[in-house]
Length: 70
Image (cartoon, rainbow, N blue to C red; front, top):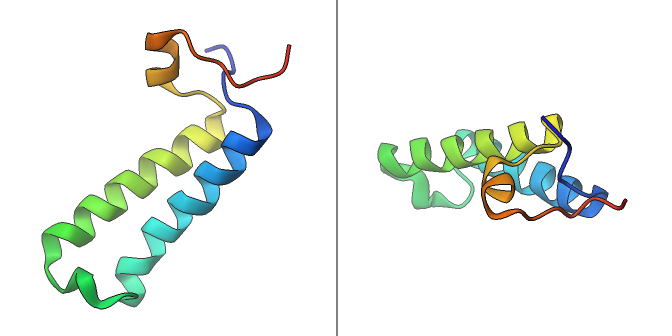
């Protein structure tokens, strides 16, 4: 796996991913009273956090996009 995420992209993915993981657990905002939205939010948050930690996005690879500096 070749790194294809730049530092700003990684930071944004990590912050948004962690927010999506934690907010259903804290019920902030209260839109996650339905369990399905909470699971979807946590799944998206897990994917964003994982791509930030591994510095690799498979969708970027598929489309040939890279935000890394050369």
